[in-house]
Image 1 (spheres, rainbow, N blue to C red):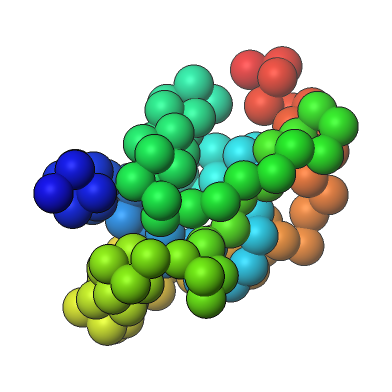
Image 2: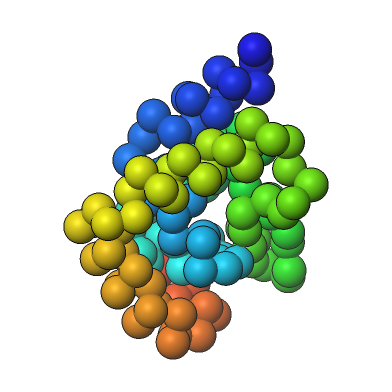
Length: 121
């Protein structure tokens, strides 16, 4: 029951759902997600923490940066089914399509430059 409740809590926020959908394109660092949504890094980190606790994302640290990705095939069935449901339900959502276009631009930028710029704000 706890696993289910953590997943539903994580999916109850638009920015967290949009983050999951952005991660379909592959691994992203926190600065790329911050750039995509225009949120404060601390807000993005809190959202990612909730997603991580629910098992909906995995993370790895590389130097100063933390990268997030969707879990692999070894994820629990309930996690895989939740991610599939989100993707199917929102595949044609205008916000998601706009995020995908913005993400293409962000992925062309050096993550180190994004982080430096965000730290100056």
